[in-house]
Image: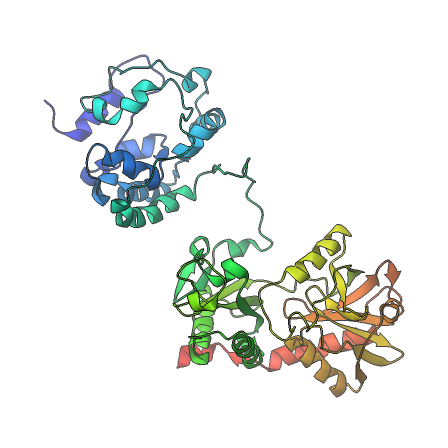
Length: 497
């Protein structure tokens, strides 16, 4: 009997015959002895994967499984090797094949450039001559079937003696699963992959917990307090010309918010800075980028509201993205007034910069429905507080007015602009502002880290001023831009340390 695997494969593939297509099923472990180079280069390949949650119990019915026997490591290597020679293979998930066999096979045939045939969807029950000696052990379920339809909707209990092997196997399965075009979903038809506002953000690195991980691996535990109850604080920071603008002020507010919420085991200021700098450096982000810095109360030992269940310490998240200002700061934006009122300090103090943003999100939904850029939120007495995402300023007869911070978040950018208003020798008033004052203002702008200074040209259908960006707004935009060029904590300080 021939014992050279390469010769056997070549004999099967290249032997004389009339068949236009020849299908060869390979076990991934064949890679250990080596797959023929010409087979890799000339063949059309696809990879079939199955969730280890399903593989392991099935495998265990025949023989105790091992990491080696599963062959997932070799399968990942095969995928990467095919990519390196310019032949990335389609990846098919067995669950997808069972859920929608015709669509999955049609897509696969299209990728392989072979015609789809309805006969691919059905077969006669029973063994096949090509099954091999191992068929009674491995193929008995297939022998009972006549198609891809899954008989049992719900799985069997998982044998937790295999839990460690599951933890080892799932990351490799998930690496391959990312390349599946159409993933099965309990929510119905999978949505198409959306376009990112900045395509470069498809590949970025984020800090989660104690490490930097790729975008697709940047996840927190389902037991984390931010998932369980929005129990987290956050800051938004910007990077200009190799410097983080207002870093210390943002960290001051983060620590104040964490203390107000009685967080325990909070990372030190230096550790948070180190995580920020490392994340920016790893991504090569030294300008035109935004940081979403979050600190959650951390992971719980079991689901529940009480902070006494948080015994692991806080979870730090540093999400840095390429992100220019998110509003049209050249031509201006449009606002509407939401019916959703800003939280009162009787309910939740706005000076705590927390992640529980449903109050703001409901207002933003109103703004979206009105085709506006954002929505103005009023306080309980009907006075203007802020928008769903930014602080507000108006110009009225030469004076610059901004709502007091009893209801609105006292933003870092807001404070910076208030200082600039005084330095630029304008009159500044911090007081209650009525909605009619907004409607009749000479100029309006909003402030926030994501948008900087954003002119407002229309509110609730009323044109503001002459409908163009006003002179006070332009002057303060220029002053703010100059400030970002001058101030900030240099990222290079960490590199030089």
